[in-house]
Length: 435
Ligand SMILES: Cc1ncc(COP(=O)(O)O)c(C=O)c1O
Image (cartoon, rainbow, N blue to C red; front, top):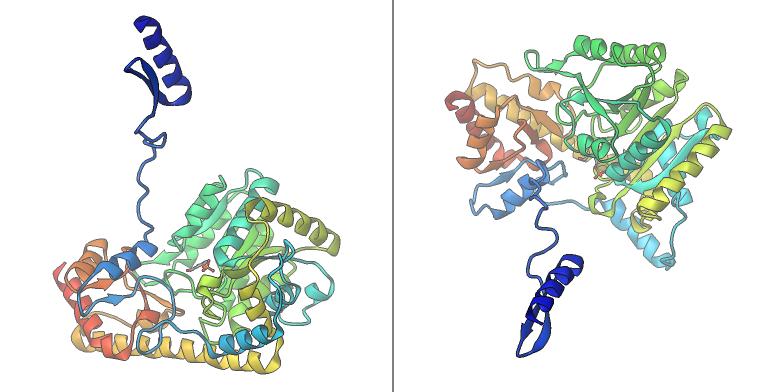
């Protein structure tokens, strides 16, 4: 009997993951204490979002968070734009329902988003050859794009700049889309390695995808000039490369929405088909609302119709329907002339504050450490400065001075104010001199 019970115990344990015991003549089932997920390894913290977690945990009174790319006002507080509050008021008064949006998203939002990208009345819009799907901000739009490439451009590798925003690798990698680097940043000139970039893209097999930052390159703050953009477009045409623009900072590079859309508009006007992910996180401050879109400008309306049907098919399985609230806000702001003008003024204000602290930081560093050339700080544009600090110097910035930043040496100037400029400059000088 005992022997039979032990055999039975083992068999049940193996098959259903429970331990069977005999006590006081009764058979007891005991659920195993060990999880079936014990083999799951701890994932490393995200290199960007992990910085904010470390910042929150710090008790230093002088701590400074220059890690995450989110705008702060002069008191270093998060900002809700005045146009967003006004739009929310209007939406509230309309007392709209909370039904599902269609898979492709809110109609007014989709129109607004394409208008922002190409300019209202652009021929590609009139010809109906833009496929646009509202998605989960820039990240979700990139992911839908990656899923589309995985399914319909099988085997094509995506070329991403070195360096780039850290999540690009995850997004394409998690869709099993092969990604490769092209050279982008020249540490000696603290500028664009245009020659290296062109060489690498020339060597990419025809049909490859090239991920390009539409403006305000993250993390370097270094963008191609208009002439260089033209040469990149030439190359894409000659080599049959598919440009995929990541437009996460429209309005943040120059404070002007149209100027910041120069590159994707140029490519479309030159007859190229392009993919574009767009985000309202930064320019409308809608970070947590997850508002964005994937746009594909295509050769003709018929292709756009088919492509959109497949984008919807992919989105349906990923998250089904996009969120309503943020899309209503963006549509309200962009489609209302008065709010739109007010938004542009607020955006100029945000871009202007960043530009001002850039200048202040450069001047402070020039005063404290005149032997080094700091002019790159005001040559770079957008939210970030790529300081050239090494990982050891970054560790010193964080451990000794409680300045939290990513280990690639990037600082978000949106997290800096005039009052903290001297403190930051001292920390940088100490790190450069002593580490
Ligand atoms: C280059 C780049 N692309 C895309 C994103 C995506 O942001 P979100 O998903 O909040 O729109 C970011 C955010 O930091 C970014 O820097």
